[in-house]
Amino acid sequence: MHKHSVDSLIFGCRNGHLEVCLIQHADGPATGQWGIPGDFLYDNESLEDAAVRTLRTRTGIDDIYLDQLHTFSALDRYPGERVITTAYYSLVRPQDYEAVAGAHELDAQWFSVKQLPELMYDHQSIIEFGIQHLRHKIRHAPIGFNLLPDKFTLLELQKLYEAILDIELNKPNFRRKMLRMDLLVDCQEKQTGGAHRAAQLYRFDHATYQNLQDQGFVFEL
Amino acid sequence: MHKHSVDSLIFGCRNGHLEVCLIQHADGPATGQWGIPGDFLYDNESLEDAAVRTLRTRTGIDDIYLDQLHTFSALDRYPGERVITTAYYSLVRPQDYEAVAGAHELDAQWFSVKQLPELMYDHQSIIEFGIQHLRHKIRHAPIGFNLLPDKFTLLELQKLYEAILDIELNKPNFRRKMLRMDLLVDCQEKQTGGAHRAAQLYRFDHATYQNLQDQGFVFEL
DNA sequence: TATAGTTATATTCAATATGAATATAACTAT
DNA sequence: ATAGTTATATTCATATTGAATATAACTATA
Image (cartoon, rainbow over all chains, first blue to last red):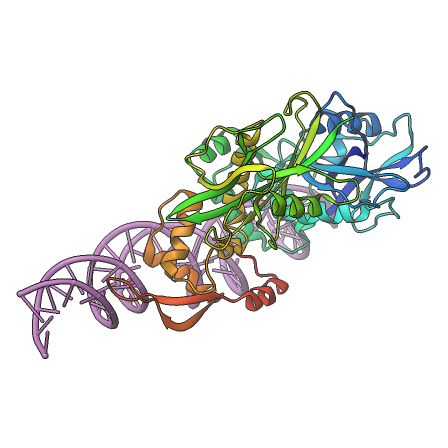
């Protein structure tokens, strides 16, 4: 027999770096070790519900949409017993979701994916899997906007894509392409506090995107 | 506690129609009903291994590459007990893989996805999930070539895409796009037995694709 | 053997998109 | 008022795309 767990990869983006929220365990076989927030599945809940519940109890992060990533089932991925895990992922603004350790954690923190601590079990490879999937997904669905405030500049959007895709984009061409999609609404406001020319603020038009999607439009970047 | 099973969606393409291989159960709670080939996970195998094993025993289909699709965990998707299932999928040529019922099936057959029999459990929605995923995947990875013989015509390739995407493509433009990718090798042979002009035969160059992929090329259609 | 019909295949045209480069606008600091 | 920097727009050459047109090559028939 085996047990089933869920693990939730919560990605964020800050200062041009892709980050992931991790917890340091206070008990169990991985006491003291860092890992992806998650826990065992209850008998009376779906994997989706379990992902939501365990994320809240482990990190305090709540009320976000989790997408299923992959189910990992190596026989020896957990010491002493068989545990299969289904990983989920989401993108959030780290500024909106302070990582707070739950009752069974020593700590909860955001880490740059380029500076991860040593991780328990197969969590390193789960994170790598998630990063590859995210890089693909962000070019085919407008999930990147979840990482931005309601009003953002095109430079913020570009840096987001550069952080996740780990590439450098050409600013004028990126702007032209994004604006040409007609998914962004001009807020008629300018960014403030900048040292140079104030940038225009935009917001993502979910309704327009939904309408276009219903008509066969496919987001591609 | 719960049990875990695997279900394998084997898609094929014939006569311009997307097909899926199904089995008719001979025992268990679904006796007489059609469903996706699969079975319960053993304690000493991974989900991947289980998918391969159960596909072979249920349908005789062997030696194919299975990609993980999604894990379904609704509480009541199985009568009387909790069963979580991880679905896999693959694309094969139906002509190469005669569906043969195993020892625990009444029958095994290829069905057009547009003419499915009544299916057990949540297999209808699993298939629909798989179709949507396939439609996305086939445009971003050259998996469609698995459905073609080693040597094929561009019209065969086009009809494949039309069958899966359920759209109509423009032949001259499709040809130009496919040839421009430089992933097809001219076999220097013509199709035979046709009633009109014989079409050129091509084959997919896996090595070239691998090399291009290593250099950052992304297949997109 | 010549021809008609059909399909495979190529090419053309106008419109659109892309990558790189250049240009202009507008902000702050001095 | 001006310099410096960044945001933003525009230009240019090239590539791609969608639709349409054209040509090639095959079989069947007379």
